[in-house]
Image 1 (cartoon, rainbow, N blue to C red):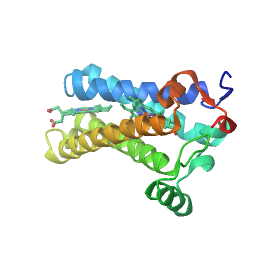
Image 2 (image 1 turned 60 degrees about the horizontal axis):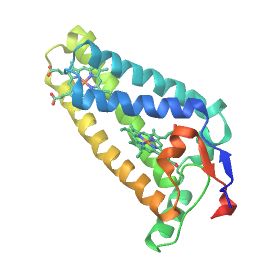
Image 3 (image 1 turned 45 degrees about the horizontal axis):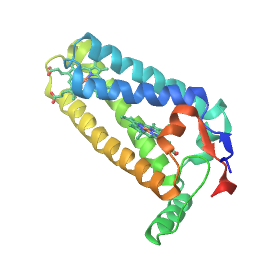
Image 4 (image 1 turned 120 degrees about the vertical axis):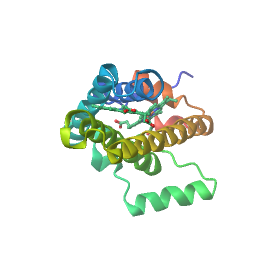
Length: 178
Ligand code: HEM
Ligand code: HEM
């Protein structure tokens, strides 16, 4: 039987995701620190953050903050399931996934703000603190990205479903198929 699918992630969510991932990896590994490509990739990512923030209020159901906001109750339920080895399956972000998502977005904003301070605000030119915070945000975000990718692969294995592909096509398998 062919697996029935539902449209879950709208194009805004998907474009946001791969823009953020691409800009982050480009700046972490490839662009020259502080040069124009580095700055524009950074601002491009921050512009997407603003769009995604608003989209969380007006976008499609699974894109909304209210759908996946990681409240203590939701996090507790997810943690108990994880520790108990039970599957925690829903069509949309899981509570722990959402927590990591929000932390990643905050760190990306931190990169944009400290980059801006270093580069465009004379008062901070040559000061150590913005660079130190910038460096901290970049490395902390890299650690979370590693966790995020590992979790996506681990959950894909447990659910027997290609979750990274769902961020490309927007489709996920119907819940009843599991
Ligand atoms: C995707 C977002 C960004 C990432 C991942 C990122 C990453 C990095 C990393 C890893 C460094 C090296 C830090 C070190 O010296 O240890 C760096 C340096 C720097 N970045 Fe960014 N950055 C981002 C956005 C920005 C933005 C938006 C600006 C400015 C508008 C900016 C300006 C700079 C500057 C001026 C330096 C320091 C160059 C130097 O004096 O060594 N960055 N960035
Ligand atoms: C490299 C930097 C990356 C960053 C900063 C990042 C960030 C994010 C963010 C913010 C979301 C939430 C999307 C939204 O609702 O708007 C998300 C979701 C997701 N990401 Fe990434 N991501 C990155 C790389 C990747 C990669 C390489 C993969 C594939 C292995 C991946 C797989 C996923 C999946 C499957 C989801 C949906 C999770 C779910 O079903 O709840 N991400 N990511």
